[in-house]
Amino acid sequence: MEADIFQQILITGADGMIGSYVDFGVRTNRESLDVTDLESVRAACRKHAPKAIIHLAADVDLNRCEKNPAHTYLVNAVGTYNMALVARECGAKLVYVSTSGVFDGTKKEPYTEEDVPNPLNQYGHSKYLGELAVQSMLDDYLIVRVSWVFGGGAQKDKKFVAKILQQLDQSEISAVSDKHGSPTYAKDAVAGIKRLLAEDKEGIYHMSNAGSATRFDIAQEIVNITKSGAKVVPVKSTDLPSTYISGENEGMSSQVHYMRPWQEALREYIDEEW
Ligand SMILES: NC(=O)c1ccc[n+]([C@@H]2O[C@H](COP(=O)([O-])OP(=O)(O)OC[C@H]3O[C@@H](n4cnc5c(N)ncnc54)[C@H](OP(=O)(O)O)[C@@H]3O)[C@@H](O)[C@H]2O)c1
Image 1 (spheres, rainbow, N blue to C red):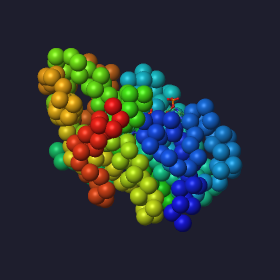
Image 2 (cartoon, rainbow, N blue to C red):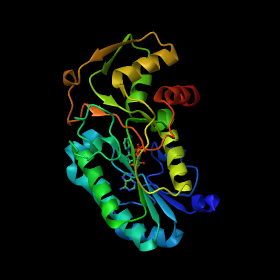
Image 3 (cartoon, rainbow, N blue to C red):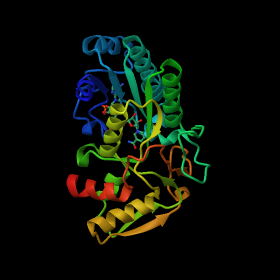
């Protein structure tokens, strides 16, 4: 039964960082399935008759999201609405990958699945609207929140960990030390999603690696793992220009304990994929 469901899963945005670890189901990308095109989404579901859909497609570039909110809401909110509508029509379970960026970061402890979102920027708002569409339209869904994702190797990784790995030949690397998040190895997040599906779970789940860290902590860990001679210099977030507001705390805890500590995951990623 388990093998069956994994063959009958439709994946959107499969060519991205998280999608690169999905080795099952029908993988689609923006060319083969644009999630903003409702009729194409309907046609794909008619053709593949999925039992579940893992919806990864999104605009994740926070700078671009601030500059072009209309496009952000079209892809992240309307695109997710389209997936929810069609999942309902074809009776598929929808797995929507969302973000710790739905929270405002004012909480001192890690965010739990029960905490109420209050996004601060266009990306966070658009992803939260996606969550609301999923929750209001479907009974059988998973909202899986990840945070500060790394993975995909040099080709796909455009985020913080890749940027630090590309600076290791410099004598000094600056990294923000006053904001926390929960780093997430994309490979572990996909394994977590598979397990949620295999166990037929429903509802909201946080799926970051265990523990939380500042960007400074992560950069320092990368330097330790790679034995680079670079010195990591802590800086305040206000010292670096940013086009968007982000909260001080994006750390998350989870109601399931599937995920290993972020340091262990980061070491494996660097050892095996860089
Ligand atoms: N990366 C993070 O730190 C992070 C954190 C929290 C949550 N997430 C969530 O995790 C999910 C996967 O993101 P990721 O990290 O794998 O990002 P990614 O590497 O940018 O992957 C997203 C994929 O979606 C595709 N896409 C964009 N617009 C599309 C459209 N209209 N129709 C179909 N596909 C489209 C992109 O294709 P193109 O490259 O061709 O545009 C890209 O391949 C997203 O829902 C994101 O919000 C990511």
